Length: 259
Image (cartoon, rainbow, N blue to C red; front, side):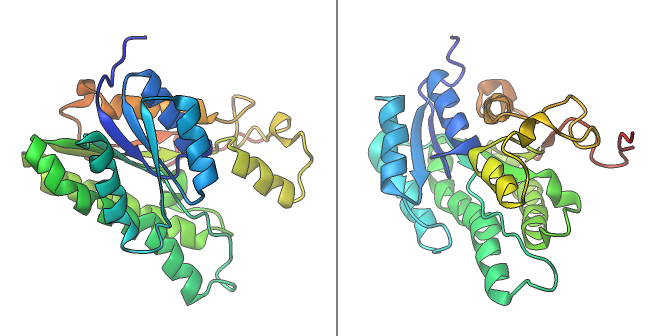
């Protein structure tokens, strides 16, 4: 492998499962030193151990405001620097307008918007000291509208998209690049379980409607990770404020396939 991320130190939040785990594993294969983050020590320790000497782990709940600075400090303490940050951790809050509560709104915004902001804020002095840095925010196509049972999640991902563009504009002169992936439907372990809970059959990934999965399948976490790696490489040194839709069809103005 070419090791496109050779010797870069990158913190990936929410990297004990799903997309975050796939990103961490691919980044390590590309030569990066990765800091694994999760809420549970056993899960974080397991992923870090499987990756090997290029990985360490840190545990923390991102709904707690002080966690962001702790994660950045732990990364720098372990690897002596931080070159990149992937804000992947998210709370997928399922509710409707009728069942939304102030408490659900606050925790969703805390994890999905406030935590990325505070993590970038905490990393900023280190990026400035090193002459630059990279941030990749993992968003969702739900940022553009979202489903009726995801109003709070969708609102938060819309906020994250504005955060990406605003900070990219503000920090560009300091060689700090901030980009975002708006990810479509992806077959993570959590998504698989969500759909079982919704009443779908165990083989539901093999029976997808053409209107939402024109190719006949949905993304794997590894495919999202392949898109993510580019934005942390030197190949993307001049790209900032970009929002890439990792989806099978145009999200805006699409003509759904109907049969």
